[in-house]
Length: 210
Length: 396
Image 1: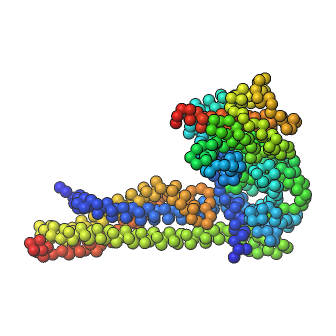
Image 2: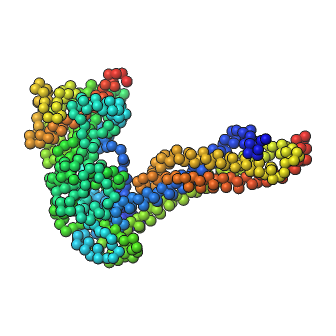
Image 3: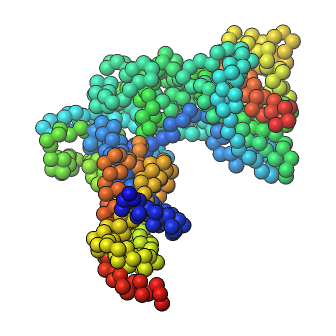
């Protein structure tokens, strides 16, 4: 019976449909991954945001303006769903986790940030990165450099040229692979985009008392 | 002057709650019926479309390897078995074969995907034959690689989205560190093609050291061919396994058939309950109007008039109930679709519950006929009321 069904199973997999919405950036295994960022956490809740639902075209323009470049390509569309994990100890919010997709030189980067309730980076993490040197970017030695930074530190970063303002704390970030300038810039751009979106979806809402 | 339909309608309005509940019962039956027949239409149509979208009706793989996708899932990509590529030359000699295309599936563990690495799967396809066989695939950007191309790649939409690739970008095969240029990104198809990374078969064979080897051969059989006989012929080839999509389709339909029988049984029960509801409502109404009908007859109403009046009440109940049920089915088609997807063993892409005008008309007709059938007895009882007995009963 099993042998008879196996070929069918194979073909079913070929026929299997997939979702038709824009793809966001989720943690692969939220239960495990959230615990890794916030070991003391007792629970977390998952919420979905999109620029389209949060403010439409006007907000989309604002996001791009703050980012400093037009969103390019097929995928950075207004309806991309963004997943925000709100991490709790008891009933107290202790932080947030949020990821974005960013174009890298050889493939997509999935840039995650664990933030404290004020929007300060606790930890940075590339869930996915393509390139022979990707391991060095995913290494703790690189990601730990972002701890303590916030949107204010990134807002002056030019995503078009990769230029960092002279007095910016970003000057202290060391590129682990000097030859991989494109992916280093993509990493900083991804973090900037992530922080802008978190500011819009979560922190500005908190300030507005919503 | 008031006509028979108005009289019947006014009679139903006398007991609004009872009439409404009867209509709800009929509406639910009609809803189940429309959804069931809509599913019958939609499922087979979608399944055929999915199978047609594969581009071939038969896949030849190595014996012991039912199909690479299944093996990938069950063995994590380690259990692939291979056929000699030159087997295609032998297969194409058969007159039943219209088109043929060799395929090679390969998998690498990308250590930089997730915490403990993730699999990246590649489908090596022949640039000369595969695009022709999958001519229905449309491109979001760019197109297929050239027949003699080597270092190029075409991405399904979701694969491209995950990798954030556009035409002209570089794509790197993890572990092998081979750079490929993106020549095309497919439009969404709703099938596994969306997540597939297509590479020229020669490139993949070289990259993975599998020169002259394939994991599957897709065969498009000519329209007039006897597929069953051809399948037997294929089994004469050494060490091959044949997966016919006709057989696959039949197996799926058999699996789904069980679910269909269950739903049909529920539909029949619902219809019977609705029918009993109609009989009960109309009969109650007749008995309550026993004296009234007697008076009607005493002032000249003929048995046929009374029969028509009661039957018309049934017609109104069934007509309104059926229309409400059909509208419900139309409005809730997407919800029905979602519910069905949860319970059936395999749900193809596309619309599963396909409700069209002919189905709506058919359901209306069936429900009205069933209702009229159910209305015969109460109408006959009403038509046969004796005026004097009825009037006397009022006095008592």
